Length: 192
Image (tube, rainbow, N blue to C red; front, top):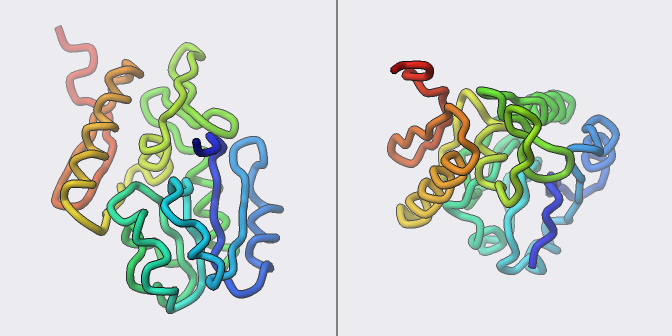
């Protein structure tokens, strides 16, 4: 069973970026982990992190294949490698990347927001757990997330997110366009 803690996984040759993110991101909302790219094979088929951050133009070819088509917010400095689980958001440097992740941790939509370390806080203060996919999509709102990989993984993710939104009872819906997923507030809120 995976740890429920929301995590940013930093992939870089040196731990400097990990230290920068660890110092700049709110530890009550996210944990920051670091892996040298040569150690990625040890991840195996474990669950993906909330966000992936890196700066290398190449990674071992099969290192992230288990995460393709799964929602992961990918942030990259420099030229991104092939095989990432989602289209990366590109940043000029690690400070800009850290600022983008910090904004994602503070994202709010129709009363939904990230709870400390995992889960969502709902309007009225209720807590909803096991919401990893929805947490990722909330953090990249309003741009959304373009997944890579197979269409079947996209359908599974969309079904899971729609169930979570139904459980949450928030006036939010999921838009699917090609391989892109985006949250938006429902238009008919308050209609008879």
